[in-house]
Amino acid sequence: MTTSLKALRDKRDQLTASVAHIEDLRPGFLTARFRKCGKPNCHCAQKDSPGHGPSAA
Image (cartoon, rainbow, N blue to C red; front, side, top):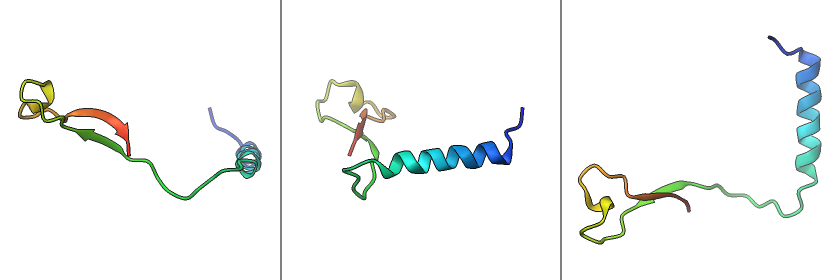
């Protein structure tokens, strides 16, 4: 199924209008982080464990 160019433009315009109404929009980004807690018996202390997470930083 293909979407018509007009439908895509209409959707873009709708999204642009809804983003314009967000009041407290600040520049920045979110990054998912995985961290190790430092406890020697925790699963995150294992060799190939990514750690705890993801958490936003």
